[in-house]
Amino acid sequence: MLVRAGVPPAIIDKTRRAHYLKALARADDSDPAPLAEVLARAVRVSVEKHMLPALAGPARLVPLASLETRKLSRVALLSAAKRQRLKTVKMGDQYYSTRSWVQQYASSRHQGRRAA
Image (tube, rainbow, N blue to C red; front, side, top):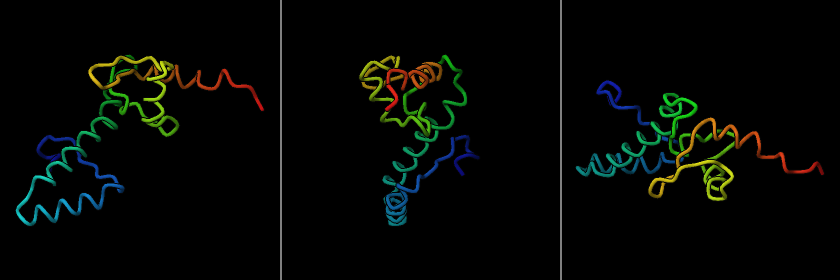
């Protein structure tokens, strides 16, 4: 329904399933606000995780959450940004970086460590 209306897909992560089902039940009881919030957050996460990285070129600033990979979680990227090991731009309370900056950081991550 959302995609037909031109809205990005709302992907409900399995960790949020119980919250979604509770919001759905409340919507059935004439309280749609919790369901609207769940869907809005799911759309935002979908855009940040799937659409922005695909649309942005390697030099385009995007939120750190958009640059998360299997090897580099959002928490790891945020930690690297705060330690100034990952090149970022901070706007308000949000960090932004580029795909190429993250690739540079990822390739330099273990260069300083010695083999045990």
